[in-house]
Amino acid sequence: MALLRAILQTRTLQANPAPGFSRFYSQSSPYLVKVGIPEFLNAIGKGVENHAAKLENEIGDFQKLLVTRTLKLKKLGIPCQQRKLILNYAQKYRLGLWRPRAEPVKAK
View 1 (cartoon, rainbow, N blue to C red):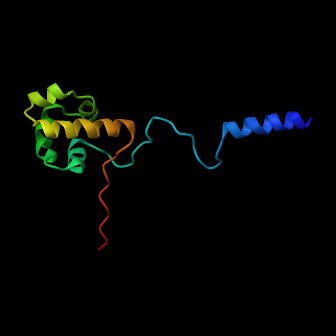
View 2 (tube, rainbow, N blue to C red; view 1 turned 180 degrees about the vertical axis):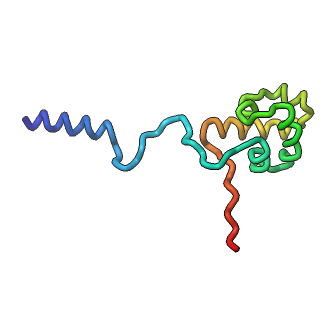
View 3 (cartoon, rainbow, N blue to C red; view 1 turned 90 degrees about the vertical axis):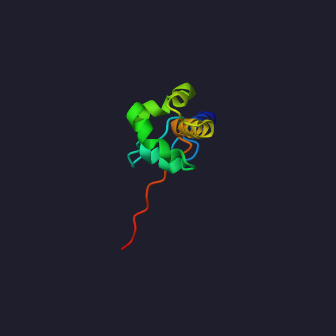
């Protein structure tokens, strides 16, 4: 009887090792602020935001920007260092490791 209780307690602990904390999943949680190409590039900074209009016209959709390859960005005339920044931050965004910060609400 005691052995059966010990087994059942072990199983419940394995199912939820830390009560109150959700399990870790590789998918990122939904983000409350809508992120588009201009917001994404402005959050990166370092001169990348200058290409927002060009990317908005040629690529159009933020989800397409996340899967764009370096050759496509090169054909659009984006310099190497800025291509690397866009691709690095796009990878971090896909993995859920980085998000553009929401603009703080200014107190009046």
